[in-house]
Length: 184
Image (cartoon, rainbow, N blue to C red; front, side, top):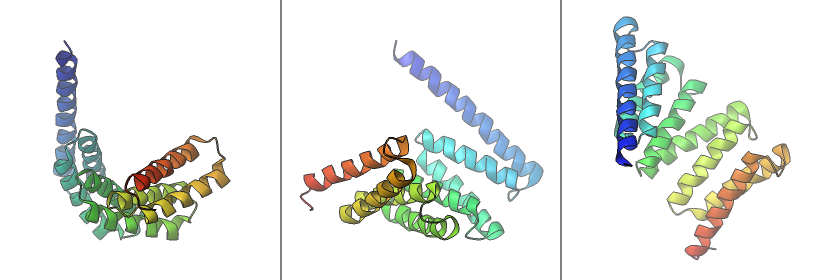
């Protein structure tokens, strides 16, 4: 009996995907490959695919949209940086840590310049970079970044805020991993 609800969920997800693909194709035909609505629909489909674990498809869609956005908007535009972060997360999920790191380092750099060191989006980007570094075995550097994020969130949001507690949990997990590998 457990397989029936799972099969229904899969069927609904596939119907939703087909619908989203049709939206992307309609936008391409009516508006062109490089129209903002086409790019937005493409990114929405890519996010959906990533959430469903269809990572290679998601990667392809993010890369296509990103190439167009970089050309149209420039490398520092918020939409470009957001899409780079989406692609970084996808590469991370695929286990392509080097590619994820390069993109995430760029996201952090641009957000620091445009939004400041303590902006919530900058802090989230730093936290994601720390996770990538830890996955690559660079626990000390990852831990330093997570400590920075935690300190800022305590100062700005207070100790009881959910984002602060999440930062604390991430730091704790890293310290556990460091101890497991006898790194510090």
